[in-house]
Length: 220
Ligand SMILES: Cc1cc2nc3c(=O)[nH]c(=O)nc-3n(C[C@H](O)[C@H](O)[C@H](O)COP(=O)(O)OP(=O)(O)OC[C@H]3O[C@@H](n4cnc5c(N)ncnc54)[C@H](O)[C@@H]3O)c2cc1C
Image (cartoon, rainbow, N blue to C red; front, top):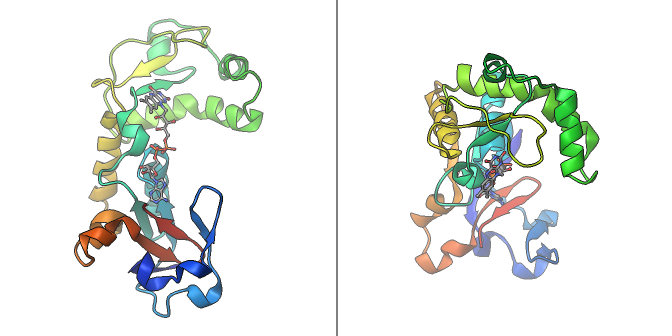
């Protein structure tokens, strides 16, 4: 269980006691700086509302956990929603229909080559082995529509790039949000900026944050 306090940085934390890393982000706090009163508790905190965050939220919710998503931007979807909406996947039904021979092993090899061997092989293996299943999940579970074609983009030795019907990742984000918001009892959404606009002076909005038991989400 994670505890949350909806506060602004200036009120909760004494700046001198914050530990700042070399990029200027607060990364830790000493115990005495933690809020005395916590406003909420939840099983799981998810930071970010892109593909990763929303998919994780769905899985966590389905496993019976209470979930809160924090998003620092005014809108949802992060880079995912502005992406080109192309999913590379090996051994999909669409490839089979077009008689394109592919395999997770070939995709693994292509990715390591394109990544100049800097990729983490274990992660690439998981990605390639789960790629067709995940792509199909976006169709069957989320209801995402794709263009009726499979392209061969740079770095891939066969056609395996599947593009959403509106050619952006927003087509997937929209469906992820539909599922997330459609879940019974769903209420746990905290866009950090909007949460604070109501009760802090505009000049302080940039310091808005949510204090968590062990870390802090800071917009600024
Ligand atoms: C222009 C563009 C086109 C692309 N096209 C493709 C493509 O066609 N195919 C492809 O496979 N990949 C593409 N990519 C890459 C792809 O978009 C990313 O790999 C993917 O979206 C990452 O998803 P994510 O959920 O990890 O991160 P994101 O979608 O970036 O989500 C992270 C979220 O976390 C939020 N956040 C971060 N820090 C905090 C904090 N401290 N507190 C609260 N919220 C926070 C951010 O605001 C953001 O909303 C493209 C990327 C770009 C930029």
